[in-house]
Length: 315
Ligand code: NCD
Image (tube, rainbow, N blue to C red; front, side, top):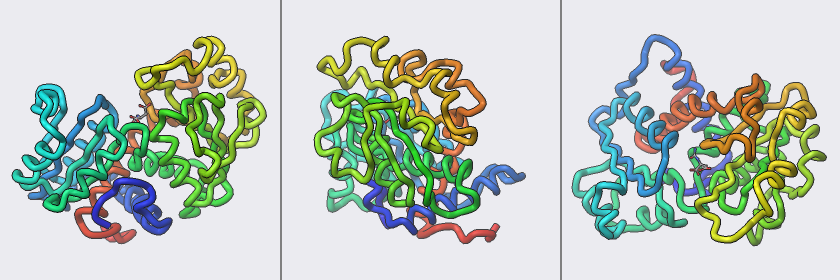
């Protein structure tokens, strides 16, 4: 595997290899060793042409913990904001000898375009392209679900996950549906019809418009941010109405199974798709998703740049 552009680049065993590597790296990280020498002398460029907090910092921390040199490149203050094409920017990065480029871009397909350039010799990792995919987020979500609910299994067979809200604008939803279903979970998408993409019927997931009927039957509820910045039309009457039907509040949370967890990729609109007390409750694994993100991104870099998954128990 050279690039990570889409979950479709992975087989189930590739995905499990990344999750197992992340588990192993987390074990090493929790011990005495904070930094591993694995990627010493390698250069990783974070090319972020769209806003990000968690993902950018997480990839940076992951690369540094593997001893790589990291160059952070954001659109603001660079020639990309002066209108330089992505291709010219990439050529500059290539000339500097980047071994991997982690790219976030507002255009769906931007990561693929970079990977398709015949002179691009490094690995390309998609850190979110438009409304298309966000594979590292899906991997960290699968890791979090497996850790809490996996009962020692390597995959997610038999688990039921609801993904709720603005599926239309969410690259997180698409990557998660592909990955979680590939790992054996049953995924249900819950959203108003206006926030579901065309063609969603062909996704490996069922669809519900009735959040309350889904809640007691799932092991994990993944709330999605209402992505106002991508909305040019009116997709729902008003925020109150949205929260009333599709928001996760404490009353709804009390209808969840005892063991079930609450997830959100962040950033959250507290009070819109998720109530503040739910986000901060004992069932919420939202902060832990961020922690797991570093280990999972270390695993992605490891697998791509060190040539394969880490042998379990090798350290
Ligand atoms: C997501 C993203 O950027 O796609 N956030 C993230 O990576 N943590 C989801 C979002 O923006 O709502």
